[in-house]
Length: 131
Image 1: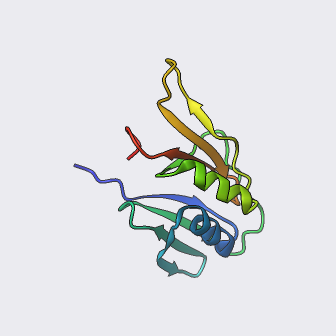
Image 2: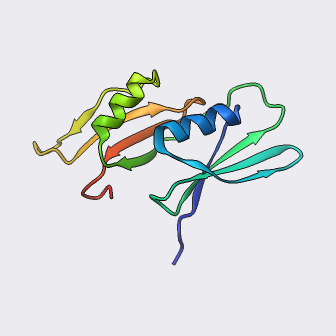
């Protein structure tokens, strides 16, 4: 059986991205591999075995075209309201909290936020299928 281990995104500014993912989700640098033309930075925390890989292409100055194929990555948290309030107070501009209730019963509470490179991130209240 296959095991999901990481997703990779390309970022312009390593320090800015590492700071964002640490402040928002407690992701720390688990490993950093520096090569001649690029650097790979693996971020992780104790909540999951999977990692987020940041690829920093050296010399790149233009933002990446995210295209229309990228959707989002998602994180689950115990207290989505508290995280939303903290991120808002830190000026990180999370979008509004949403109660998703397609059949009249709330099945998810979430918000979206963009990272410094424009990648969309969904943040869901932990519980149900979002453990």
